[in-house]
Length: 120
Image (cartoon, rainbow, N blue to C red; front, top):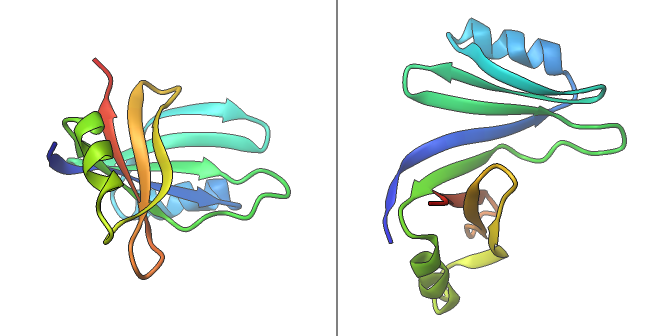
């Protein structure tokens, strides 16, 4: 198992259009988008940096920004973290509907991280 880099930052917002304008002012452009109604999302890019921006639906409080780290072997990481006292596993290794396997962890300050591997 090894982390290979930053995959993307996931950000939820109640002000979707204003948030897109914010990221565009920083030099990002919309690479693709999906969803409808009050649950839209898009992927923004600037160079090798990616941000996934998602609209928080009605009655849903936006979560803190989450850093998604790319990794090579999700199963090996799952075994390693299962015996690591230094890491709080928030949700176990699972398959996602977007074609990855991921595990969510939390650092001592309460920040969330998702370690994610593409499924073969």
